[in-house]
Amino acid sequence: MTTQQAPAIQVRGLEKSYKELRVLRGVDLTVARGSIFALLGSNGAGKTTAVKILSTLLKADAGTARVNGFDVATQAADVRESISLTGQFAAVDEILTGRENLVLVARLRHVGNPGKVADDLLERFSLTDAGGRKASTYSGGMRRRLDIAMSLVGNPPVIFLDEPTTGLDPQARIEVWQAVRELAARGTTVLLTTQYLDEAEQLADRIAILHEGRIIVNGTLAELKRLLPPAKVEYVEKQPTLEDVFLTLVGADGRNGHDRNAGTDA
Image (cartoon, rainbow, N blue to C red):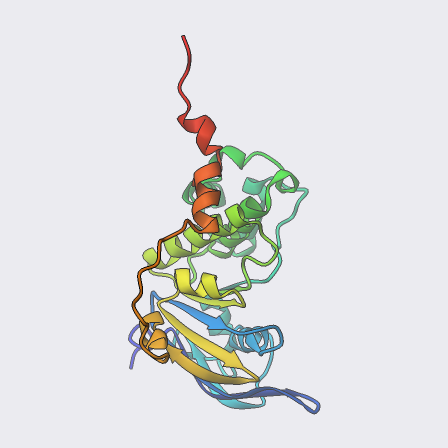
């Protein structure tokens, strides 16, 4: 099987312990190319440890893992060339402008024409107007979108997003969700770790639940829902959700919905 034919990520029997604490206890998972795969679990379930092993930052005690067709233990350099990792907190330089952050990463990765690469990514993530501003002036959502844009310099085929919306407000979370959807639409494979159930439900093609170091279920959202008894159909008047209220008031683009729709008096 060639690299392009192999799954983007393939893990078998992954184990990791810290002294007496067994963090991963035989994890198996397969991630298809171009898909969004959510690894869901509470704090301490082992999500970040799994990502660190897959990104060659940590060695497993047992088991095998391949990313983009390369073994993380024996072909670590090839794995690192194939991936990008966005951690729980945005790793942008706040002294630099958004564009300067992107140009810096492009130069560090020896990418040709770093200025054009930066401009293209600013446009792709709707940050062109803010590109000349220092990153310290960005909102949480803008900073996270810039962080993801920096991760895409060099077009890595696989990206790891570890708790990408931790600490963000509702509007910023929606902005990041849209950015993640855009990644997959362009063919990037996304492994997303999260503790937010709605985030996995909104984004993922497949969802695995990691609990006490083991994958206890793995499937599509529809498959996971079938694990529960059939729903009892009753008439219930639908009430707007908090998200409906929020988006109606502020608008999907973050502007005030009432002000945006208001007319002008002669």
